[in-house]
Image (cartoon, rainbow, N blue to C red; front, side, top):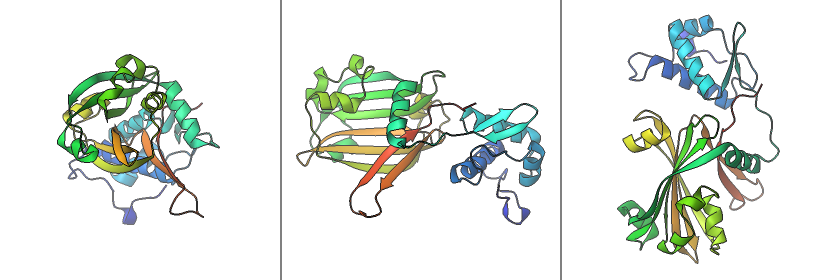
Length: 263
């Protein structure tokens, strides 16, 4: 594990973020970058106290949050270890199957409504659209992983319903309706959680979020838009690109860590 440079703590009571949350983010970054490898032991609680100049209770709260996020396996009387992750030959397909089998969808809203100006600017012509708001949750714990908003042509109202959305992914319903999309434009941004999104994701207002927007085109005309809000604690953006084809062959997908620590 990398120590704070020159022995100075990387956390500060003046940062406006609770100390345990700052320590959580530092350790989360270490794990995400591989500085703390899968299965590796974390420094002892006392070592973390000394490294970052914080109390034992701050360290324990940070480790508890890492454990809740599935990043750390805490073993009583032994210590804390980075959660073991089994290698995957096909991460996109494997993760997609895991998400569908290990999660369930709550449909919050599904109906025709006025289209917000920001969406009108993307879809050009829809003043009203079929609006879908869903929350995908981990099946065993009920933890919310992703909030999805979609704006679709009103003509899909008979296919995309509250009932059908609980049985099949949105992209499959659209394909089953005979829509063959030409291309999809992706946009990725970072934002802070507004009150509604924070409530749906079970996180604090102002927490960092990943936002992805996808505009799907049919015959060079925008067909629909899907916007996802995700906590970076359990989701990440993965981009695959062939080294011999830098202008094409790019595949992007969102991976969700839906499975808990392995034993």
